[in-house]
Image 1 (tube, rainbow, N blue to C red):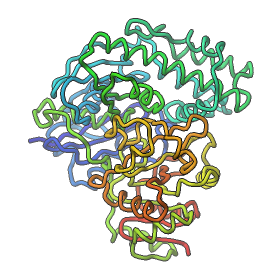
Image 2: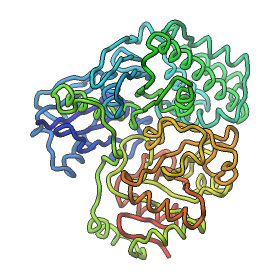
Image 3: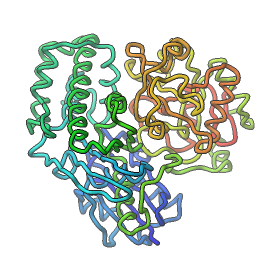
Length: 530
């Protein structure tokens, strides 16, 4: 049996992971340690996250059996981490193996990876069945357009440029703001045709090839010509960007289905599938039985995917299995937390789910810090901020406290047992434990939980909370339900705008000290300034 370290570095989203005997030990992104968001640093090491994993798990890179770097590999970054021999793993293979082998899916599955490019490839398609993966098709950068390029360069142009000629909004970081605005826009034939001229689709091919630079040129001209000069105009652009993305990708998966009709389960990885509205459109196709999106779907999941691929090759991870959760980062003991708390003048009490549920029901904003930090872009019950979902005004209050942009919707957590009462589609519940797609909300619930519903299209991006997988998170949600009759809470990531999700207790205490939150639940204790 083997200990495997995986690394991705040299580009944005540096990360490290370790797998032993076919089980995930830890996975962590560099941004959580450097405190610089991946989209702001487009050439990064994985040194800090590697050393943190070594420190907190006791596993050492130089004592591991295998070291796998995701290509392309820069010797500069390799030598920071180890001087021992290592293997290479293809970028899109890391995406694909990570997605398929954490999907828990049996039988026939199609796995699709799609992003802005890894090595010289933007997409791969695999036919999978019971632990075997067959590469069906790959799309080299020089012969395939990429929808991810369309989103990336739209993002960097839409708000203009700063004094250093950097986009005010950054690709690989702010695309979600465009997705958030899309529902408030409307169809515009001219804009749709402009976007469609930048990328189109036919017969399993996206074309033309130079999506990136054409998009940058066209979007810069649109900015100068006033297409993005008001919030309403930006919303219209984003609506058509989302619509084109949905239209082309639906044609693509429908064409795949016509060729391989017996494959009704789909696995996804790569940055494009951070788009939860696209994922919803695919999930709602009649022939689709289930979709699964790897929780760290972007490049931050590559180190883990590389470990999983090597573990599979060694026979230690033979078939897909489900993740209980993705709380794979460092955790902190009550004693360590108490020691750190001495730097602050907070009151401290023993945690009571009933008391915190009462605080939530009264409208307090609660910081929630439990166990290992989440791997991936979502707060999923380890580094979260919790608020009652019943008030329309919550959106403004949270944005003010967290200094966030107003278009970003907030997401709900929901008791697994109550999910079908609130949302219209019952497919793909496993992937929804990781908040990776949207659902439409049933009419009778829209006005009950307005803080977590998109105001225009009435969708939500829920996290299903399963008692056996996240018992403490389930407990606080259930206690709130007992008081309010609402089996839902607002859950947003524990960070202010333009900073990564917090990783350690000191960062949580600083948020309490700044009164970003009203109380902090951290492991078995509650801290407050009262």
